[in-house]
Length: 73
Image (cartoon, rainbow, N blue to C red; front, side, top):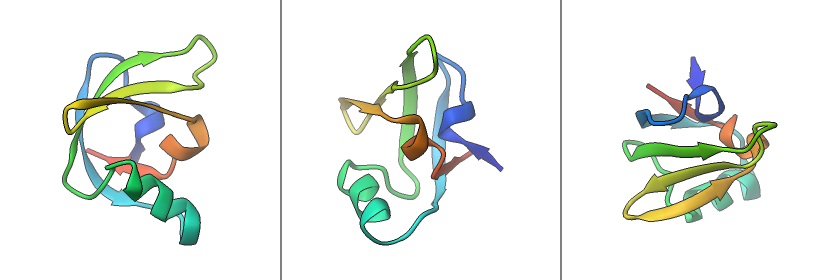
């Protein structure tokens, strides 16, 4: 299983599943990351944290820990 953290710059991926539970999963979903959404990885900071992505027409920065909970294909 590939997570959003493993995606290279410039790739477009589709969300398959969200891991985690409770408030953490809810926060990720509130940011617009839901099953079936396409995400374009725009930038990754030098040490991998944060990751800047485009989805649903806006830009979003995610921590590595949050990106690991997003399973993509």
